[in-house]
Every structure is written in structure tokens, then in C-alpha cells.
Amino acid sequence: MIIDSHCHIDFESFDHDRDQVLQRAHNTGIEHIIVPGISADTWQRVKNICTQHSKLHACYGLHPYYIDQHKLNDLITLNNWIKNESPVGIGECGLDFYLKNLDRKKQMDFFDAQLEMALEYNLPVVIHCRKATEQVIQLLKSKPGLRGMIHSYSGSYEQALQLIDLGIYLSFGGAITYERATRPRDIVSRIPLDYLLIETDAPDQADSQHHKQRNEPSYIKTIIDSIANLRDENPDIICTQTSNNCRQLFSF
Ligand SMILES: [Zn+2]
Image (tube, rainbow, N blue to C red):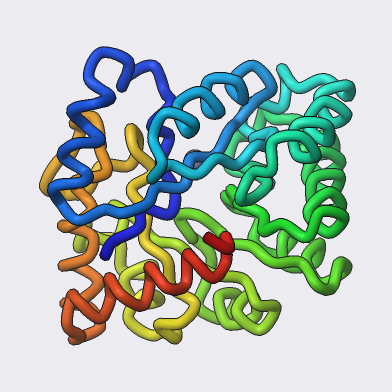
């Protein structure tokens, strides 16, 4: 069994062939896919798609990349969505300090509010984190009891260990299939398998074999093989353990 722990199958680029993409995912052995919502105007779309396909699991959140378009009121709407729709998690939320033009104070406020919701509803958080790993660690430390994952992890090995200490899972995708990605490849080879998740982040972040193409869940095989190689472990063990991790985190 394989689980794609982070995939935007609701995005427009799948509108013309979503069923075929999901069929190919199924043929590859993917049993479940976590689908994070990124802004208030996408939650209905995520809900519709996840209702139609039993293997898709919805999360709702306010992504830092779209911080300019989020309104304060969206947090209240999000709270209602979580209460009424019982998602498997909250997200995608987090901090993106890579892009300079995104309001960092507003990002911190929205992230903090979503972490509080995660505590209130005892749900895991799906965290997007670019160039802000230290800030994410500090925030998580200030809220004991939080559960969650960092998708497409890009921090250091030392920070990875701190996050694992906090009970946070680390997810890796297409980036680790590129030989030049020495740091994430090193981390994925060394962290304990019981905190590892795999994801495609499709339609983005295609692996080295599908460079510059639209990414899709069935390409996860390349990622699994890379991780198995880097860790010198059997691909079946990677699939089984990462699937168990994901089911445990999202409780399905
Ligand atoms: Zn994402």
C-alpha cells in the first residue's frame, strides 16, 4: 500500500483528466491521498472531489503563499468548516519566508490561529515551511500537544531531529530525486523511518524523471525508489511504514 501524503488533486490542471489521473494512481498502488485546501474559495472544491472518491481525504486551511487574499473573516469560516465537515487535518498552513513580498506578520497571525484550531479540535496540521523552519519550531514548542507534518521538508538535519522530538512527521517528495539536492537526500537517508512520509505535491514539484512536466500521484514510484536507494532499504518497507505513519497521523 502507498499513500500520497500531500497532493493538490483539486487544482484546475487536473480538471480535464482527474479520473484518469486517479485511475493511474490506483494502478500504481496508491490507496489514499491527502488533499489540502489552500484558501477559502477552494474548500468547496476540495470537499466535492473528496466526497466523490473514497480514497481522497480532505484538509482545510489558509496557505501562507496566498496570504494577501486571506481575510480575517476566513478564520471564522475555517473554524465552521472544521466543525461541520470533519476533515482529517488542518492545512495547508504555515510560513513562507522565501518570498520577500509576503506579509510575514500576517502569515504568523494566520498560522498561529490555525495551530490553535488544531489544538481545539485535536487535529493534525499540514505545514508549509520555506526559509522559516526555526520560526515553525518555536511556534510548535509554544503549543505542546500539537500533531502534524511538514510537507516537502527543506530544513536542516538538526532541525529535523528537533521536529521529530516534538512528534512532527517530515514529508519528502520529488525534490529528493535530484542528485544535486544533497541536503534533503542526506536527511531522508538518516531520519527514523517512523517519522517519514512521502508525497508528490502534484501538480507541482515533479521528480527528476518527469522534470518540468505536470506532476501526478502515480509518479510517486520514482520517489519511493529514490528513498529506498538512499536508505538502502526495501521499497516495500518504505511503502508500508510511510503508509502506517500517515494513517496514524490522520487517523483513518
Ligand atoms: Zn501543498
